[in-house]
Length: 248
Ligand SMILES: [Zn+2]
Ligand SMILES: [Zn+2]
Image (cartoon, rainbow, N blue to C red):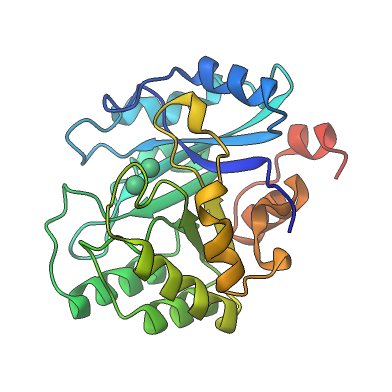
């Protein structure tokens, strides 16, 4: 399997518990031959999530900065009822919408987490479910993954889990990868970098992907074209500048 040089989950200091600016992220990406990053700060429900204006104003970020493609994104918070905190005004500006459970949502039980994921997918705005292996928010993985497959929603394998955060999640992540390999889910890789030095560091998940028998064709990070095709298939507008930049 290739070394992936696209990272679809990064944070900036617009979320206070992250430490790099978007420009520092771009410089790091440029120096490490990373072709594309998605800028996906936390939604406003989280205590130190980005302000709602942060998201709609992402339009000022050029499509390609110093040779690095930048997707305008959010990592929204899934609430107990399966709704998300994507600011309405930002919706048309966003290229990619991630969502996951975070501490602003009190953990419930397996059944209710599963139900929240399904409601989230019914709502159809969210493209990628982040870190579903979080030990604090377990769900019925098979049911959730089958629903994701049916609703064309990508599942993230997150390389910060059990390294920088969400300690104890590895077993769940392995189980999710094993099921996703069998079901054939669309997979998104995210470093969840909260500082530039971690961008596109996928070392910790190589084994999980291999053990889960995840095929390269399942992983949208395999090429810029695969990312852009996926986002268009999810109903996002075609990004001409990136299509022409990558000649794809
Ligand atoms: Zn997260
Ligand atoms: Zn994150």
